[in-house]
Image (cartoon, rainbow, N blue to C red; front, side, top):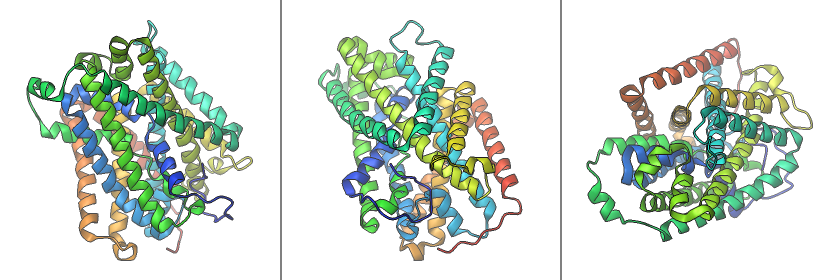
Length: 440
């Protein structure tokens, strides 16, 4: 993996082609999201879960459009934060706000994946539903990959490569096994569906956005890639297509194989609970192995990349200066800080509130990227219609989640709103008196 945020152009010692870039994007996106969102989605919309996942892939494609255009134009491995800073150099508060939102979005995904890791890790034990046991295991896995990331970049890279490719193979096997052991058919499930609420499908599609974030890691590797003008769009769009196909295949296999009641009752580890009854212990072990590898890979990779982005933002003065310090090029303080904040979020939040905060945050950041791209669309050679459509789609997704929260989870809305108040206040305090001028 590469340092995703350092703006200094280094001599190229390795060239990344299309295959490697697709692998980077897949590693960033397939991080346990399907294991996390499946139970919540089925409990809300049942048989229409695959439809919501397809729509989630379309929303991700809308977000990717502006990331791709800005990535090809700026060729800056800092991605979201750097794009906004360079597009609006006279607005340090805006850049600071994007920086804070992006970093805490990544912190929420680390918390989300650690929580999911813990849920599957203890799913075979009698204390599987013990919340404090789950949170303790989540803290332990965060600590493990904190130590791995602090220990060695080279060591982390080797571990990450093994986990990325192994988890993809296991996920494909899981989808095939589930499909091959189906207990019903789609026509039967559709016939038994009592009602269809398209608004609920759209809400779930928006909630799934966190399972697609990570494609921007391709842009982080711009200094090491061949032909960025061609490979950035191809890698990102192909990766989103492949991830959508994997998610849909697994969700189809799950709803055709596992009774909805079991999926809903065991939201945190739905696939493992259902597989035990249908496929036996070997099937359960396979699902658990896939979930643990997927979430482990995501925790490690996200901590690696986001901690470096945090260090760069701190170097610009928008986070405490100590977070910019590095030892042997490793931002130790940023790694530790992100890990502690992720564990804090695990302690105070539930799976669903962490999921919703992550999705809202990345939708908002993607919306700001679309706005930035719209502002300089002539320079990025972007379609006005597509850019406006992306803005409308991302804004709609954000509003749909907030509508759902307001209607059914008002306490969670206040919790999420409180986090945003803290983030906005912090970004404002650190941006006061700051000025910078960058060239595009």
